[in-house]
Length: 361
Image (tube, rainbow, N blue to C red; front, side, top):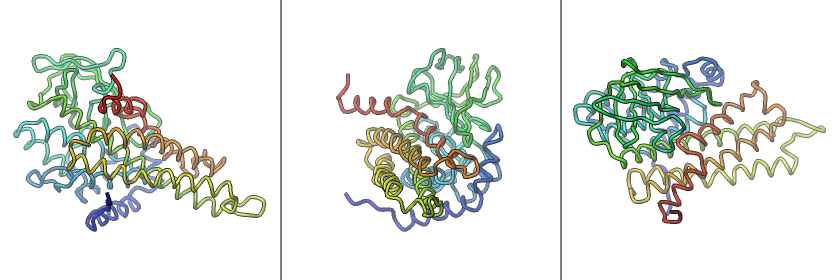
């Protein structure tokens, strides 16, 4: 099957690329990584002018009504520039949860605000993948009790979407009585994650919640993380090739050495075929529902492994300079590392794929 982006999609990706080149240079990434709250409201306001928060939201609610492939090629650019923006939770997973499980009133209230970039939405669904010790959320009589870790887009969220242990989805406001919030440290300082502790916290359930709805939200998140890794890996390859063409040893640029050529070629050979996998996984979320879950697992697990290989090899090409903050290569390295573990590491996701295909009990 031959698969290529449309002219409109190429223009969309190029416009996001130009926006991030101008507004999210490495100096701003460093500044965001040094702050507790990584979300830069001014940068998000600029992204909102491009319609990025409302990409997946129907036009009736003020969005662009685009598909997951469009979102994936945009998030690839976010990975390319390690953009410190709340795209994953706010623009993908939260709107999808509301569209799949929310009531008409809930959709009319929140989707236009998300589309306009007026609010940031945190998403707490990781306990639906694997419950950690002393974690998990129980729902009862309009309240939530328990703890959830690694909440996506946590830092400045105006709204949280929380999954309970029975696959119910709930809306929770950050100022709700009995809700405690704590930042969690990860290797990737360009994105915020945190912990929420619920003590009989008032919550508004999404009435059409189901295990399938939660799974589809996770599938979409996994495909976007694969796209993010794809963009970050591509940038690391380009930086490696450029560095190899400038750095000299023994009176020659290191790119003339066969070993360095092989390292760069191996990275490109591993990453480039992954592009079609990510694109098809995103396409399947909209157009091929029978393939969507399995392809999301394949894309997430495969890009996790390819991304790690590219990150390590690119650092090797740079030698000792690859570990310095001067070049900033570590931002992409850490971004790929965090993408690998968020919403399930490759070992767990491959096991899910095996279950889906009947290869594991």
